[in-house]
Length: 98
Image 1 (cartoon, rainbow, N blue to C red):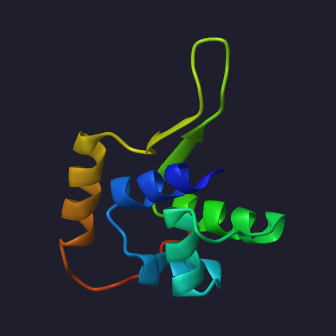
Image 2 (cartoon, helix red, strand yellow):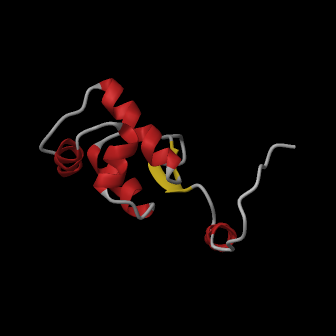
């Protein structure tokens, strides 16, 4: 994953560098520098960043014969609205183990 793809994924998922830093365990400034192309991450840090972005809804598309690499949302807009509505319903929290 290169810097522009990382930034695109984060913006698409509507999360801040602070949120991604907390999830990935990376320094927030290091993520900012990487996204601007003025800093580098090692392979382990790139994987941590990728995992964090995936957690927040990014789906990375590999390069193939039809086009280059890309990123899109894991869920459609309709599903995102449904999930937001479900999470905002309130009510008592219960066990979800069956």
